[in-house]
Image 1: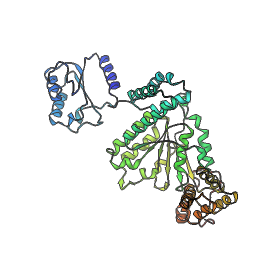
Image 2: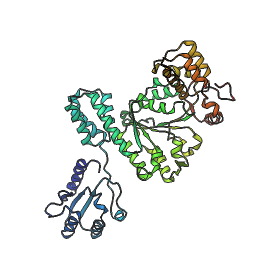
Image 3: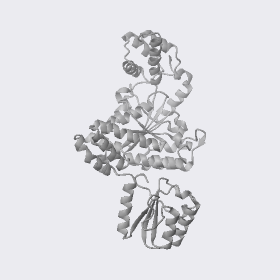
Image 4: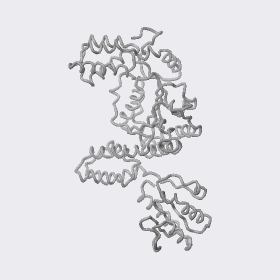
Length: 467
């Protein structure tokens, strides 16, 4: 039970509608009118000796369920029948094996977006009237958090005379903490913009065109919303960066699901960790979900562990039937390892192939990284760098600039064009060491995936000169 006050209120309403009296037990207070009932076993004996129709909530029983005598008493109560309903409330989502056949499971639904918005609106008037976009952004950050936590954050921001920006930062921190508790999810922030990506104009146009289609208004109107994209291609060519920039352009939080951690067993059984992550995501929608290296999560093995077939089937079903405002941006380096079912229409709107950058794209990528580090070079030097890095990926171009910075600072001076040229000449690009794999990727993508770029990609060795 993640939010006891809200759960208690909901359960009491249900008992009232059923016309049943209501009592609650805790280890501090026990049962009303029963002396010594702080001990759960004493309380259960008193309930056995006083049969009546009522609802009794046993709060915080996780540790109590490790006692064999308590389990025995609960089983006897279940077999005795009668009109009393016992509700066991705790943080664990499974009952002990000895009790499992006797119990049903009630999962507390997270607060709805409307409930979260109502709480926020009660405080926002004191922080300043937000725009509609700002309100949606704050609600998205708070969605899925317990309502009492949202109230405490708002009250703390008010007490410190904060503003809307302070509230945004506080909610972001709370959201990161909540996601960290799940274990297999990560909230990615801050995010790059599309301007931080050199080239890939075909992909950028696709994302821009669908920006206004991913909203609650479109869902309410019954219109289709974007479902997701699969970004496959050469390693280091911007797949992860493109997934991040998509969330940035749409002004949505970006969550990363680590399938390696799901299968690791570090956060419970793979099934429990996976479904806990999906429940968290669905509560926090709208959002962009980034699944990096999808082939490692859905291939035959992950970190030496074979992916359970039923979990793989559950993931495919979720992709097909997931909430409309969870947009999946998945990346893959080795598309041949993905099961064919993943690529079936209806799970992703489009499959994009990200190839080695063209001449114009290499120029744009180098200019972005040079400007980021405050490095200026002569136009002729930039032309030479662009020419001599044919077959280089975007990540390798970034490393050219970083290596030149390190070399220059080691000699106590600013970066010069010679440092960049030396960095290029001292490196071997991936297109030379893995040209067979890159050619195989290109052959697979031809006719199967949409090119993310509008330009002709750089040749690899055997197709033309490579740096």
